[in-house]
Length: 430
Image 1 (spheres, helix red, strand yellow):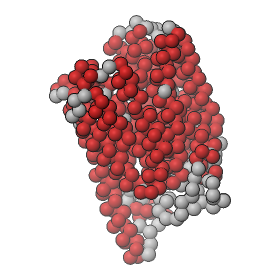
Image 2 (cartoon, rainbow, N blue to C red):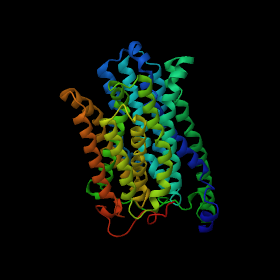
Image 3 (tube, helix red, strand yellow):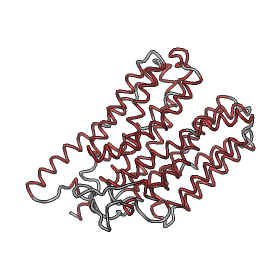
Image 4 (cartoon, one colour):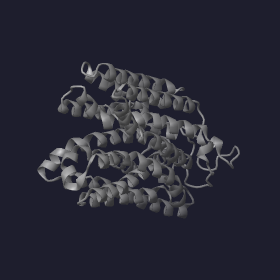
C-alpha cells in the first residue's frame, strides 16, 4: 500500500482534488461580484451609504462567526457533509438574493451566502490535510491560486455580463460554479464507499484511504484558546486581512481623492487583486521548504510597507509601483492558509486551527475598513489612517513570530498526553 502512495499519488483522489479546486474558485466570486454593480443596485434596491457600509462588513464578520462554529460542525457531521451543507447555503443564498427587490432581503440573503462560504473557508485546509497529506504544498498552491482567480475574475465580468443581460444574471450566475462543487464530491463519495466495501471484504485498506489521516481512531479534544500556535495564526491572519480589506474597500476612493481618475483607480484595484495570483502559487511551493517561514513573511512585510508608504507619500507618482509592492505583499495570506496544515498534525487539528484562526482573524480584520475611513473623517487627514495600516502590519509580524517555531496545535491538547490519537505525525509537504 505504501508503494501505491508513492507511484500513483493521485489515483483514487482525483474527485476530491477537483472538488477542492472548484470550491476554492467559488469562495470569493459572490463577494467580489457585487461592488462593481452597486451603481445599478443602488437606485433599484434602495442602497444608501449605511447599507453599502453594512454590505462591506458582512463578509469578514460572517466569516468570523462561522469560522468559530464550523469545527464543532465538522466534529459532529464530518468534513464532507459540512462541505455539502456549505455549498447548499451558498447556492440558495445567491439565487434568492439575485431575485430580491429590496435592500434588506438582499443583505439578508447575502449573509446566507457568506455563511456558506465562511464554512467553506474553514473546511478547505483540513480537506487538503485529509486527502493529500503527502501533497499539502502542491494542492494548497493550486487552491489558493484559484481562490485568487475567482476574486479577480468575477468583478471583471460583472459589468459586461450585466450589460448583456441584467445585474440579476450577473450576480446569480456564480451559483452555478458553487453547484458544480457537488459533482466531484459525489463521485468521490461513491468511490470511497466502493473502496470501503472492498476493504471490508478483503480486510485491507482501500487505495482511496491511503495516506489519509483521520480515517480511524479517536479524536483529541483540542482547546485552541490555550494554544500559542492558534493565537499566533489568528493574530497573523487578522493583521494581514485588515490590510487587504482596507485596500479592497478604500484604494479606488483614496486614489480618486488624490487626483487619480476613476477608471485608473478602479484598474489599480483590479491589478492589486491580480497580483495575488503569482504569490498564491509561489508561497505553498516555497515556504514549506524553509526552516524559518518568518523569513518569507518578512519579505512580504517589506512589500506591504513599501506599498503603504508610497501610496501615502506619493500617490500620484509611482502609483503602479506602490500597488505592485502591496499586491505582492498578499503572499502573507497564502502563507496563513498554508500554516494551518504546517502547524497541525491531524485532520481534526487542521479543522480546529482553521476555524479558530479564521474566526478570530476575520473578526479583527472586519472593523479595519471602517476605522480607516472614520479616522480620516475625524482628523481630516490620511496620516492617522495609514498609521493604522502600519499598526496592522506590526500585529501581523507579532503573529508571525508566534507561528515560526515548529510546533503544533495538538501539543496543547487539554486532555491528551504525548500520544497522537488521530492520523500520523505531520506529513512531509511539497
